[in-house]
Image (cartoon, rainbow, N blue to C red; front, side):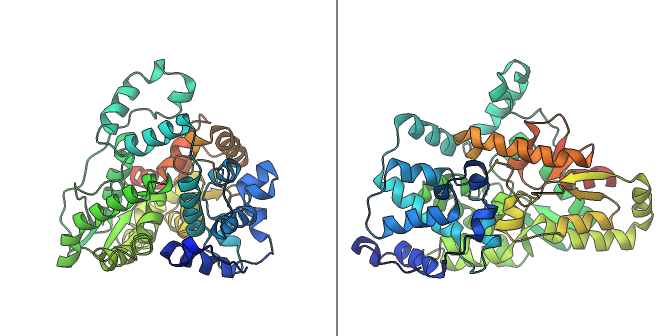
Length: 414
């Protein structure tokens, strides 16, 4: 797809990157068939191809409108289109550029501004944890819409204290420690069983995705730089082999630090190193499997007899954003845990998509209910996923327990 950049974009990093991405675009439309919002709305402008044309128009100097902004807002950034695209179009990067350019030119209504500000400042605030505790304490009295966003209180569990030669850093995340603290502790315990020590660095916080994707890209980059600075002494010493992320949405962002900060004269090279060290927890699952097979074969045999079966929703951020498919299924199956995917549409988004469930509740709930309907025929007594957003969003629509897969493994290992 050829484009003639408007003069104001020709000498900018964003303009050059967008132009390079657009050159790969063709008219095949394969992406449209796997776009969740197109499936729901049937509007070409609510699919990747239509949104690409809208962004192209802006880059060529056409004035965007509120309608342009609306179609870009409706995108989940699930990146299913990237998995489908035969030309390798990096749509996720393009839509980040497009949203930023449109928001600079199209003022938002006051209500939207306030809500977006509250999300980007509130979710990443140190006060989020105490506020969540208050919400959990009065959860039974909350209205249904708010109750759906406040998970039941959960014990954090015991953090392992054993020292191991193999060490990894772990991103605690901004909302996960307050909403579901056992996920991080369970991760540390499972890795401990594989002889891997997990280290948390207190000054590392939000991965930067919340602000970045709400078009406070400078704020998001500041959080990325803070994380890099917090991790750097451990990385520089050679004491850690990886940065483990157990929320796949955060994993996508940390793996893209190198790209996002590529023009930063101070942090670019460090960001590239951090991205290279970042691993989704599922990428360490083969190590866990190997150690357990060698040291606890009787446990695996016993577990196989129990015939534990879970329904698995692979988050978009895992299967499309990170292009990691099959690791969770294969690893848990080897350990005697039956993993079953929805018979159809397992590739589609559940509608969580970070703050999307708050900003686009109607579309988000339709996608959630559609996902739960596809999982229901499996008849499993629990659903597992790999991202805090997917877990809480799915749980808001079903009485079936929804958990992180590492919690199920941790529970069976206990």
